[in-house]
Structures are given as C-alpha cells and as structure tokens.
Image (cartoon, rainbow, N blue to C red; front, side, top):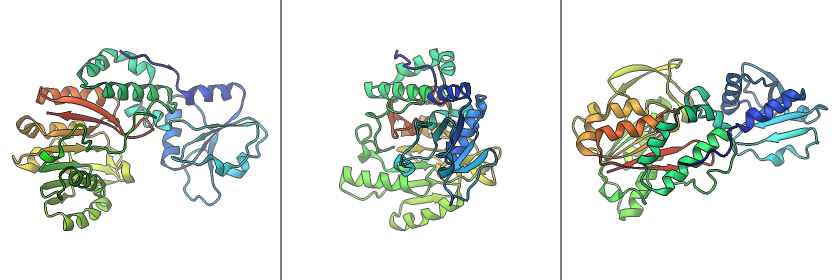
Length: 358
C-alpha cells in the first residue's frame, strides 16, 4: 500500500494564506477551466476576488470581478494569481513585482469536485475499496500510475505523473494485440480522432489497413457530422448519432466541446441505447469508452457482449471519483479472466484509462 505524500491541496492551502494576510485572489482565465475552478473553490468555501483576462477577451463568467492582466500587475497589495489556462506561457506576463505570486499547478485536481474530486478525506473513507482495487492490478506500472494519480489529485501539485504519462491512449500495443481486433465499438467517438489513432496503430502493427467493422457512437451533432468523411475512407465504419447507455432512451445532453456529456441540466435531447442492442449479438473485439461519467451505465448496457465475447476494454475512469472502485469490480463480475491495467495519458490528473484484457 502506497503512502499519501501530502494531505493538503496546494490551491486551498495558498488561498488560506492569502485570506489571512488580506491579499487579493484572482483566477487567470475565464474560460471553462477558470469557471470550473471557481465553482470548486466555492464548494470548499474559498472566496475568489475575480477573474483576470486579456483586454480582447469577450467571454465573461457570470460571477466575480473582471479585470485585465495589465491592471492586476499594477496592484499594490499582495496578489495570488491562479493560472487556469492549459499550456499558458508565463513569459506573456513579463516581469512581475514582488507582490504577485503565481500559482500554476494541476487545476484538474479540483475539477468538478463533487463528481470526480478525490481529497484526503474521501481517500481514507474508502481506503478498503482502494486497497481491493490495487490488488486487482496486473503490473507495477499500473500501481505506479494510480499512486501518482491519487497523490496529484489530493495535493494538486504537478510532478507525480511526469515520468508515467504516455501519448498512445486506448491502443497500447504493449497491452493489446491489435492483430486480433476485427470489430470495435468506440463510445465517445468525438470527431473520429480516436478511431483514426486506432487505424494508424493497427497499420503499424499489421502492415495493413483496418478492414473490419467500427461502430462510432457520438451523440453531439457537430462532432457526428465530422465522422462521415471517415466512413468514406473505411468501408466498415458505421457512425451512429447516439450515446451509449444501459437501455434505449432519450436523455438531456450538455454540448461542451470535448467535455460534452449526459447531464440533467443539458441543452439538447439525445437518443441513447445499449451496446447489446446495437450489436444484436454480433461479436465485439474491442470496446473503448470516454463518455464523461456514463461509462458504468454503458458497461451495464454491454453486459451480454462482454459475458459472451470477452472483448478488450479501454475505459476512462477519471470522470467520477468512484469509477476507480466500481468499474473494475463490475467488469470482474462479467468475466473473471480479465487482467486489469491502468495507464495515464496526461500530465494533469485526468485521462486515466483502465484496460481489461482477457
């Protein structure tokens, strides 16, 4: 069992310091990341004075003071400036005064905290379940990835995943024999990027173009329309404007780029269905899921397929904090012969994928 290195989240700790000395606290960036961070800090009872944006930025949050970057740099009092822009180049800010402290760490450690946040209290409360999960993992790298992921989630500090993250998400040839895959189901196909990555990895592995069948499930109309061009180049590709779920239904859906997903406060209605119904008994060799927290529901809708054919599974387990515990446990009830692996595909505490390999 690994050790938690730091029980305190760096964002909460720093804000407490500035609260005590009556300093100003601002979030640099008023886009999705900034808004989510603001919501998370509010959840923990932390007040933020506002958002810092460039003069030419039109997008504005619904709450908090708005000031431009140049103005915050001129403030006489102590300022904590939290960076909430991925890949932000600190050189853009020029020379900073001694009164400004930059906090540029893993904002995703607090992302959607009520759904996917893992703090020290949550971890200790569910310690036995986490210990059981660790015992199910099949190699040292999986354990190292989980250890780094949870430590970074709790502390909010970059570095834990530095030497572990990879770029070949979902189709790791070290874990998967791509030559045996003839039918895949891609849940959360987005604009086809994950299928194209598979097709490239398949060709590198076999020397041939993929000639099998690929069901690409994508409920977002804007993303779905981009899948048609892929189906022209691959005869076996079947784009479906539908979401994966545990039954046939119509649900509300929040359209939000790469983070679109089923939500009670959604802005459109979408059709959903279960994989078992879509395949109608057809074999599946590989199922990938990146569907913003709906993974467990979709797995339940693939129960017969998994029990019958034991397909390779590549399932995102970072959208809900309980997924690390509940998803592998559920998969094990469907087929006890699966071996479980975890791989990380980001420097941030996101993009954690569970592989179930028969």
